[in-house]
Length: 73
Image (cartoon, rainbow, N blue to C red; front, side, top):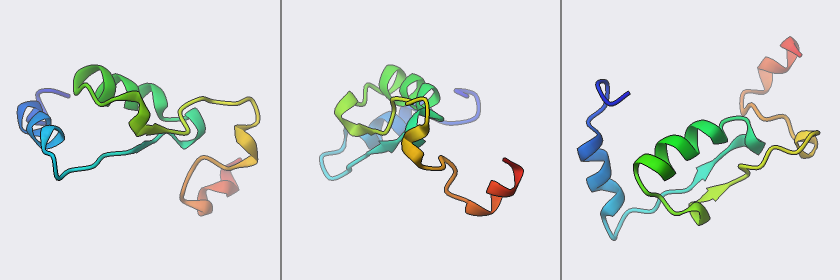
């Protein structure tokens, strides 16, 4: 990924005082990627992460924001 994106520029963005960032882990589905990229690489505090623990039933919420994909379940 570091060859595709300019991580130094992204780090600069995250350090700005006027920039806020929150990561929604879709009830744990995308949290491993978000935590690896944003927390471990860019040092985003864990309090900026929401819905990153994957409960067995996904809290009854379908994780994909595109509801049309439910037909594949």
